[in-house]
Length: 129
Image 1 (cartoon, rainbow, N blue to C red):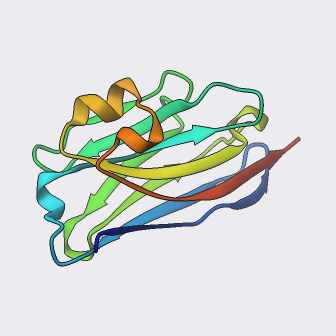
Image 2 (image 1 turned 120 degrees about the vertical axis):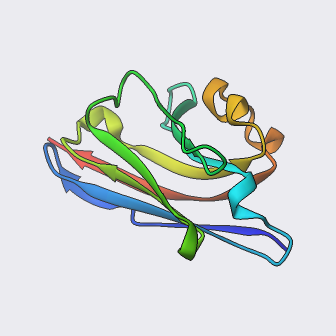
């Protein structure tokens, strides 16, 4: 049974930093064959694909709203990806969900949550002014 375990959310003041982690587990999950990333959902706002990384070729993407502030990375030995979030803004406040899919394009384009191969639980990020 494949699971994505997200962690690292919390509350921080604007300008601060947080690091999200997403660890994949399950005997049938081949970490190196998946793209893993994050989308976020804030109340009253559209769902947004934030960032993703392909464990096949190392390619990454970032939403324009986070470019230059967020950095995604992967540790294959730990089956874990990280999202380092710096210079956080109030508008980054949202629930962040970890997702995995065999196709990087699906992460990049954004999908309905149930359309990804795997969906983890959300972690709340709250940025105050």
